[in-house]
Image 1 (cartoon, rainbow, N blue to C red):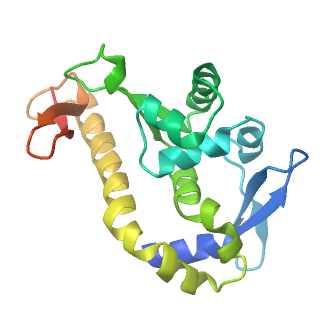
Image 2: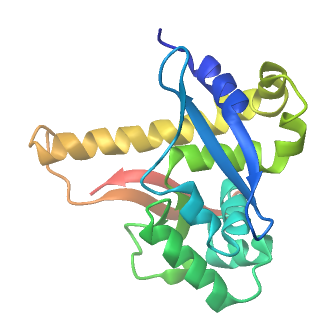
Amino acid sequence: MVLTATENCIYLCSSFAVTKNSDMEDEYVLWTRESKKDFTEYDTKRGASEISKIKNANEVFEALSKGFSRYKDILDQSYVSSGPTLVDVLDKLIRMDVVKKEVPINDENNKKKAGYYISDNLSLFYYKYIFRNISRMNVMDAEVFYNKYIYKNFETEYVPKIFEDICKQYLIRLNKAGKTEEIFEKIGKYYYDNPAEKKMGNLILLH
């Protein structure tokens, strides 16, 4: 049976369980249905257990899940003790392919405009909706929890972000297969000044 996006989200909520590791840090274990009767521990290549071993990983993930992507903002929001410590955490998460670093294609050498993003969709879902609300989720019905803490934001922020990534992956596949009208050499964020809102805007551009 094919589940709708809403049914999948509710199922994920009901499937998350919290354990405690030896360092008393929250660690999540996700169980997925392998058949109608049997459950098996979900084992990703990234490995939740490996992430739990990285000190300050939860704090960095939480900052990223709230939309803070610039290095300075992540440092301020995550309360990581120092810049070198944050660099080390980000480097480890990037090597595990759960976090990615992006630079604007029109200013690739500008480190100040580099952004860090959660690249693993399951991790993004967990830290965006579950991690900070785990105590509430553990005492609430999964559907009630979804409607109160996930539904509205899921439709307006999470889905558009994932759809953007899917479109990029699709265009890259077409480009590699030579099926685009014009072959592009770069695809990514293009940063521009937005004087009206006194901030920098960005859009996805092919080059």
